[in-house]
Length: 102
Ligand code: HEC
Image 1 (cartoon, protein in one colour):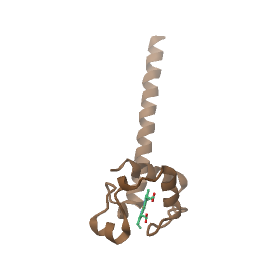
Image 2 (tube, helix red, strand yellow):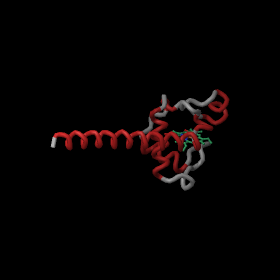
Image 3 (cartoon, rainbow, N blue to C red):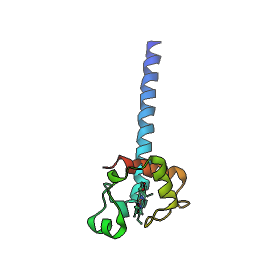
């Protein structure tokens, strides 16, 4: 009985870990393929791109997650609309990843 409970706890922990890793990796992959060219791999664009495209480092965008998802989906100034090229889920994952960058 105790053994069953213990293995169930281990299983639950493993599933949690795999779930959160999957989420982070999905966002990172979408970001690297679709966003990095303008926003840089660390969320800070190179000086040349920053000047040319008018992009700021990730931490300087104070907008909410929803506003950012909207901006990415519909496009904003020099950022082209990512929808429908990317699904809503991909846009959300990429924005969530972007928001973890400083
Ligand atoms: C062609 C270059 C380019 C690409 C590719 C690009 N962006 Fe942007 N992004 C910009 C520019 C330029 C801005 C600044 C827009 C403004 O405020 O004038 C911006 C702004 C943003 C903002 C802040 C919006 C706000 O004002 O709240 C977020 C979040 C963002 N980008 C995320 C992403 C994500 C996620 C991707 C990939 C799915 C992506 N961007 C791809 C150029 C790009």
